[in-house]
Image 1: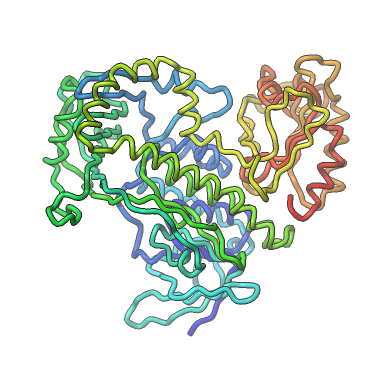
Image 2: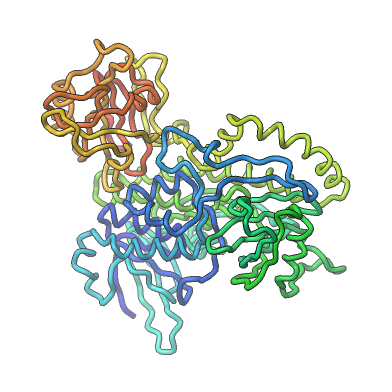
Length: 584
């Protein structure tokens, strides 16, 4: 039997596992990623990439490339009993000043996974990666297909994993890893080995989907590039893909036989055409043809009791930690955010910057997010998919009156878009989280605390003479995934007499660099154009106002794009003490 070792072993090469690989590559941590499948699936499954996910991928400089592969729907229309009753335009609803990605991207999971794997291949930056391999014939960071975990046992200061490839002349391999992360889906081998429970139940409904080309009845209509949510005899969703294709999803009862067994009859495109004809507005109808995928899924809502084992070296993420209905397009995005949260923490512990106990913050911060996701999607799906005839009659009677009033309130719709985009996730109140705020000295107008998302906004670079330099960019373009970032704000947007001078920010930068035991990149952001000091100008003072910084302040940003610590510039010594502690 062959014996090898690595720092982190990722089991599962779906979007969550690949995203975790990107994070570990950015942290320069040696890792391997294996998957029992023989190769990448050509089925699209998840379709929606939320705006916050795009922001997080932008830390690796790859979000714009993924955007080119997908489609942005012009808007959404609600249909009841074959009649369009309410709609909204994406541009109007998502007109948000603090993100470079005010939209949902529709892109097949197949394309997303291919793109992430391709990006991972370009991100081999750890010491072992720079050598092009690990000395054992493998390219570090390359997905090892057809390899499964036979046993997983934590022993002392590591985890012993036996891998096999199922070949006739198989030689099993024993891997000694500091950490094992299960990104291996709802039937997770890692979760079972870690002794974690997976509580919940199955839905009585299933959903069927078809990815197919469509020949619209009115090819000249401008209403094709829209999402349609149709309430009628059941629930039908139609989502626009590229190249005159749509995804048609129908929810229905999965118990259809007299014995109560699940319906497993072969799906036919004609079945979807009947749903399409019955639920879509007649003037927007069309003919489905040349399907690329027909599938049936049985739905569950389940979650783990913990995101790691008691020994603190075996973790789960993505569907291995939580499965739920596809309402809102949250599942894949939540899994990617699990990976982003865990990746930099593994890096900090592996480098010896933080103790092993630091990794408990992964459960502390992500478990509440997973639980809320299960609760909200379960509530929404139960209401939307209930097949009781009386309920359907009442629902279809009331919705034509209710929906136009709901969607007329743009602020309410915008707030819902904000939540679905996962911008609203915060770790501020996570018990055992690793964030802090020194609010005293910043006044009552403070709008950001430790644990909050660092919102985006436009900045303008300046050269050493204070003249315009780099031109405008977004703040988050500065915040790569490799390290912490310290943002120093001059203040003075309301009263310029309260603004810190260029010298004040320069001295703060020097003090932090000389006294912090963990490196961070420092960026000075001025309310007005500085004279003679390299930095950035906050365009129109938007960032100062959105953060509530009328006075000089700082934000220490974690590698995952969330605020680690927030405070007035005068409390920089407190920040340094906190950051040098064991749990920051």
